[in-house]
Image 1: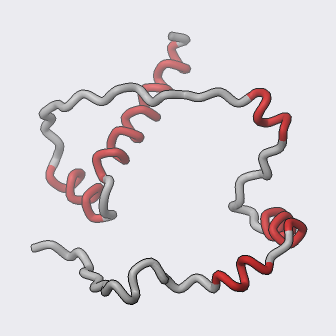
Image 2: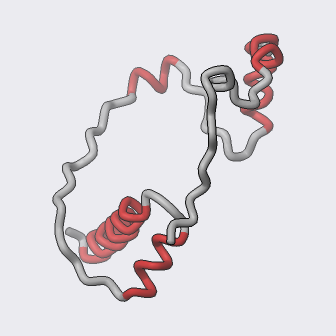
Length: 105
C-alpha cells in the first residue's frame, strides 16, 4: 500500500504557497549576500570569474536494464522515496569512480 500524501489544491489557492513574497521583495542585495554568507549549506555567490570558467556538462544517457537486488536493499532505497533509482545509480557511480581512482584507470 502506498504511503504517499495527497494534497488538495483549488483554483483559488493554487500557486500561493506559504512564502511571504512581500518580505522577499523587500530584501536588498546586501541582505541576500549576508544570508548566503551566514548559511553554511549555501553555495557560494557566482561571480563573473565563475561564469568565465563554467562549462555545461551533459549527463550520460541512461540505459534501462533488469537487475536483481536483495529485497532488503531495494526496500531501503525505496523507503526514502523517489527517485530511489537515481540514488542507486549515484551509489554505483561513486563505487565505480573510487575503483577507477584506486586502479589508475
